[in-house]
Length: 445
Image 1 (cartoon, rainbow, N blue to C red):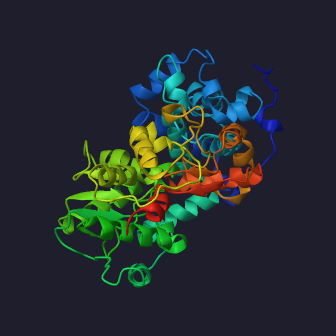
Image 2 (cartoon, one colour):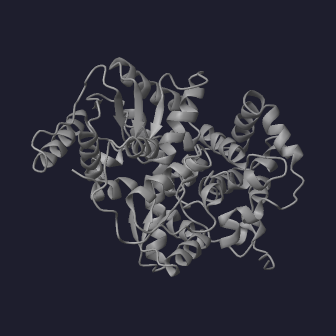
Image 3 (cartoon, helix red, strand yellow):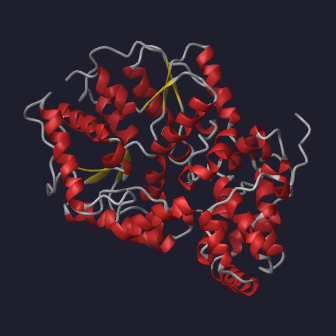
């Protein structure tokens, strides 16, 4: 293990972010103290206290964190170190911290932790550092100090009920456009809109109609070929993404998930099938329902991996020719550590690809892409920090490439964004695909 580089937060390169700076400019130390005290008394219960008081600073979490490993084992990037620099100091000083402290704590909690929960597995006490970073973000949200890009996305979602400001007629136009494109290949294919009683309510994240409409096309073909009874809504409620979950705006999370669930229930659909997105699945399956006061979602929620697995297992989709190029698989945190879909993902790959090369570590031990947890959504000011903060991911991919892997499969939108930057920055020369890309390419149509 290399000797830790003794670099403090003050010595790190300062990154200017308009949201953080302008939010902080509105604060006084008294206001900070007041809001933090309210948060600690109202929401900082036994769980926070137990985590803070239990941590023995043993350092076992450090080796689990890609930021720590990629920054030459600098202890300020260790999970325990990040807690100490943020919520730990706030609890210790009972909220009597400066405005400058809040700015630094905001940057650490939003851009130096992906909330991936890898460190939780290595902590002997099971301390959930992601929970504490989210608590810090919640304080920042209450103070109005949030990185500008992710706050803009959260505002868009709260105003239009989708994060990309897609108007209702544009959404329907996109579905009809993809239907017409697909009808060139399959003349009787339809993208059913507002079909009551359908087995499947299919939902996607905001960027799909905006930037990746071909994924809607591909899923329409997969639904068509498998004979699925499905629909998509014409009204708001189609966007299952959730940056509010990462800005600490839990009230808005509940509102957005309520719209999503109510849209599926209005159509009397039997289950929600979601596209290939990890954070959206975390929000719909595991977070939004709890903020609404429900133990579980009101109807079954299925990630695309589970759906593809069902189709292949039940032979509703048949493979014409397996993909010949060697592939490797990136296990997304939210659906593997969070849901345990790693073996289903491998089943789909082995059914559709001739040569599968594991990257190491893998499954629940896989390293995060460094885009998740809303970090990539904090935008260009923090891009270089994010990419250099995940050098270990580049090493992991390079090792898989040495063994012959040409394609990286990542069934998550945020992972695509993060891995795309890593592949480009470290000049790895690997192709990046969704599972749906592969399935569409090799299936009988």
